[in-house]
Image (cartoon, rainbow, N blue to C red; front, side):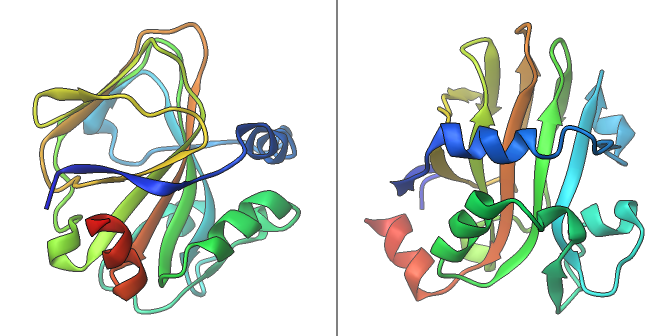
Length: 186
């Protein structure tokens, strides 16, 4: 299977951005794996391990967790809720991830995040620009606002935001199923 696949679904960037604006008074949580980035990489958890009450625990995509639940941050984000319902696969952790202007995510690999291992990560850009370089296996992936991408992140990847604005993605971890498999081989 390819290391990057643009799925044949897309979403309205304006409506995604409208939902994002609803969170203007929420403090973003610094990503806890500080050795993987320089600058500001932060998160708002929308689904997390069931029972987690502290925001830092909500953002952890625990591979041993069997039950995930919506967080209070998802309430009121009506379009993002529609987007998630349109993904007909078991959802695990879901979060908004912001890479601030001038920041970079260093090259790293996320263990077991590949379709062949049964868990995938989907990226839906909400805010991005041509100045954001997402590199997977040494080549650039251009992710446009509203698109939905499968990326095999068990492979080496990095992101560099050389722009003047923040990059924000809706990031969805999901379990493979027949629906998702059909999209990935379409």
